[in-house]
Each structure stands twice: as C-alpha cells, then as structure tokens.
Length: 225
Image 1 (cartoon, rainbow, N blue to C red):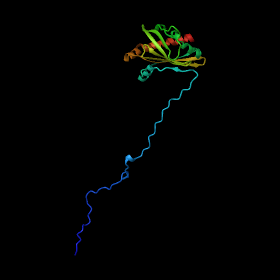
Image 2: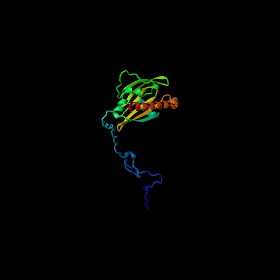
Image 3: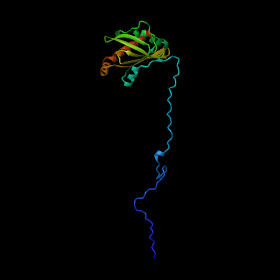
Image 4: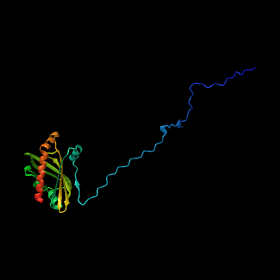
C-alpha cells in the first residue's frame, strides 16, 4: 500500500491572532476618528457700532470731563449734602441770579470772608474757571472751581480744582413750579488725609456745611423772596 508523504494541512495556531488591516478613514467599533470630524467655519464676531447720537434739545448742553470726580466714584468715598428750596420767582430770573458768579458773595456767610479774585465779570459756561478766597477757622484758603456742566435754565455743576477738599462737586438744579422755582443743591464731597479726614468730618466739617447752607437758604429767601 502506497503512503502519501506530502505535507499535511497546517493546523491553525492557538496563539495570538493578528488583527485584520483596515484602510484609514474607515469606521470601526462605532468610533469615529475625531481628527476627521468636519467642523463648521468660525463666524466673525459682529462689529460694535458707536452709540446713536443723542437728539439735540432746545437748550445747548455743555460739559467737560472731571477726572477727580471719576476717581472718587471708583473709590466710593462720598459724603453727601442735599437741600431743596422753593423760591417765589420765575425760573429764568432765579437761574439768572445763580448764573451770576458775583452773587455768590451775597449768599455766603460773612464769617467765611468770601471774595472773588477776578476783577472782571465771569462769563459762566462749561469750562469757566472761578477763583476766590475765604477763611476756614481763621485759616486763609484759596479755592478754584471749574464749571463742569452747563445747561441754561436747568442745571449747572461746579467742581473744585484746588481747595480744602479732596473732591467737591456741587450740582445746582432748577425746576419751574407754577410761578415759582424749585431750587435743589446736591453736593458730593470727600476729605483728604484718610482716617483723619473722617474724624474731621465728624468733628466739625459736617456741622460747618450745614450752617453754610442754612445761611444760603435764608439769604436766597431774603433776596428773591
């Protein structure tokens, strides 16, 4: 009997089997190569447009930027004083009185020794600088103010440029009330010297300001009442 001595079929190996090769880009096992995910193109951010212009009103509004006032807003170191008074005169007449810098001497207490240093009449408008002298507790003080906002017949703001306060901002408001005029004073101020300034405010500054504005109220009532 003839025996075939040819090679017998090779049995599969029981060891580790090689994984079949896959062409790049094909998905397998439900996983997608993140590098091949197509993303939408980036959209440009919308351009920021300037604020629309403010409509002009009947009276021109003039103003200047007050850096010292901006600083005190950030630091939040305000002290506040508010007064309101009804004057039995029409709006134009009352505003005209306060718009005349020389009249400030008439409504300031005599014990302050207040006097303007300008020899000529001061033309009030935004940016006008007013210089005057006074005495605080017998100490001579030179005070320089600037008109930061000027709205004829409505309001104006004076700020201290040089003086005893770290910041002084006085807003004068006028509103017609029948045949009379409502006058409002809003003062925001801060003292220098930190803690010492706070002690001085409690000791005498707040009291002094109250006396000054009490006198001012009585003087306005006497002159315009």
